[in-house]
Image 1 (spheres, rainbow, N blue to C red):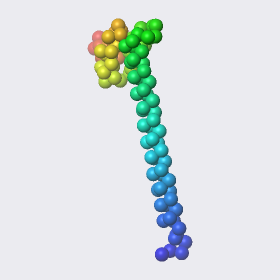
Image 2 (cartoon, rainbow, N blue to C red):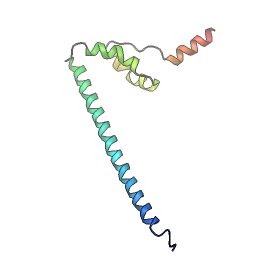
Image 3 (cartoon, rainbow, N blue to C red):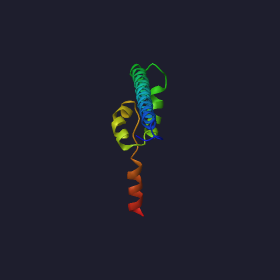
Amino acid sequence: MSLLGGNDLKEQQKINGLELKINREKQKLDKKLTRQKILLGAFLVDALEKDSVQGLKDYIAKTLPEYLTRQTDRELLKGLIENLGGTMAADNNEDKSNIERNI
């Protein structure tokens, strides 16, 4: 055993324990934030289904397609948007491809 490095192992174990504790707390926070988003989404879906907020359906039908940037998300919510009376514009990548073909 070294005369100078005897406590290094104990200190490293303390650091590892603290990092583990930090990671657990981060996971708890992530779960809490995810639950908040799910509850908010359920609340909005309920308001949409009951048509309890004047103009909410129109607002979501108009702005949600602009908010969604991933094609998979756009495909996932296309039916909802159409049920609300909105339309899903063509994917930007498709538009770019069409423009490039015409040049």
